[in-house]
Length: 84
Image (cartoon, rainbow, N blue to C red; front, side, top):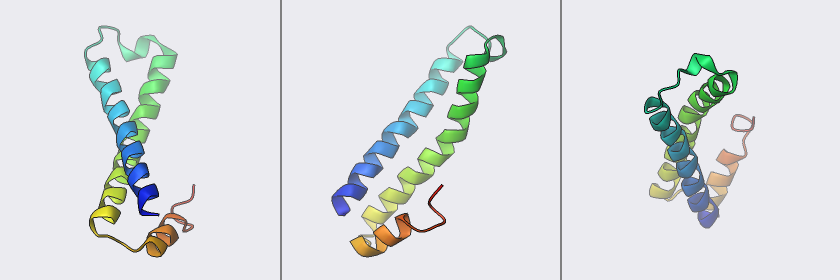
């Protein structure tokens, strides 16, 4: 179980990095966001997902640092409040 949490921490960290990279690329672009509907929708979705992925990354890092027992971590990750 600990290996699974470790993998998820890196996966969500990569997703967070992809969101940040998108915004850095957007800032260096000369095209305004309002000129393209797909670009606007992409910006909207990346903006919504950035705090979600960052929160998941911090949660998994916390679970690893605190050395939460595997059964307790699995129960927390599969509870109704974490299922979308």
